[in-house]
Image (cartoon, rainbow, N blue to C red; front, side, top):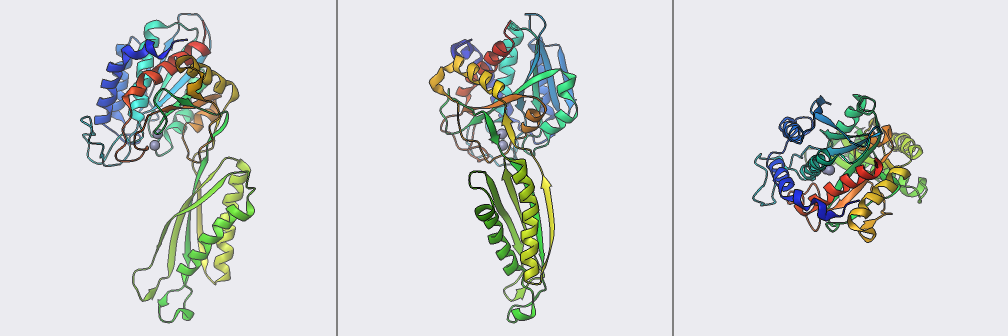
Length: 387
Ligand SMILES: [Zn+2]
Ligand SMILES: [Zn+2]
């Protein structure tokens, strides 16, 4: 088990990679230059098993240990940026107007590359490591597609691990929990169809705006009156569009929102009851609704064995007081959930210091965190695949 000091010598180089990636952000599946950069670096480390074009632009590289046969563990980094106009004012700011690495995936990629360089140079483990560089985390499909394209079976991966930076947590600290980590994500659209008319004569209309307002309140009571308070359900109405003028009651109102849950039973309940609630309220006012619901990412669960391994690796790097082992799960979502559905493993948070929050135009990944992330990956591999 190494302390972070072992990895300081990789910091300057990893910082260069990170800032290069930061200057050249790409979105979704269009991470062509990023994937090329990753592939070139991996090859320069002497890694000869590299597969590209998985889920369009994903890359998986395999490093074999020198300790003999053993299992293969997967380490995953995401590569995509966000459609945000950068306002960090850093010298290495985005060179592409309207795109920026505002979630730190540039840092995640640089940390996994740093670990790849170290592991390819030392190979003090048995079995193999599969380095997974995925596209399209932000729109929530890249991880799913890599799993659908069979990476777990193809590379014989038996456990898989992920990591995300966390602004507001000190550099050199880690945080994790066993069990639920991130919530399932669903989206819904409701169109309320009323009957428009002159705003001075509302009794001759069916006002879809009033109906929409009742539905919004009704949906909140699904959370407060129909859900066990010890279980978690979030329903947020995030869009409401209706009308064109001061004196016209419109024909229809459109609304949309997001649903977050951990339990499959609550996820089913929310889907059913949001429609039933909107339907019932609309009917009561003589209106009709059109309802659409989409299930996006599943909830993400850390597995006990993987969590314990992750804790051991992080503790070895920074000491036990710097590893929070029982953090609260987040109602946010993360598409690494698909990989943890396919294989056991764990997802850990790494401190990014007092930076702006992720998805904020002023955010920047903290390069001081690089040796910690690299060291965590190396300790994890050498612990999970101890020769
Ligand atoms: Zn993000
Ligand atoms: Zn992210």
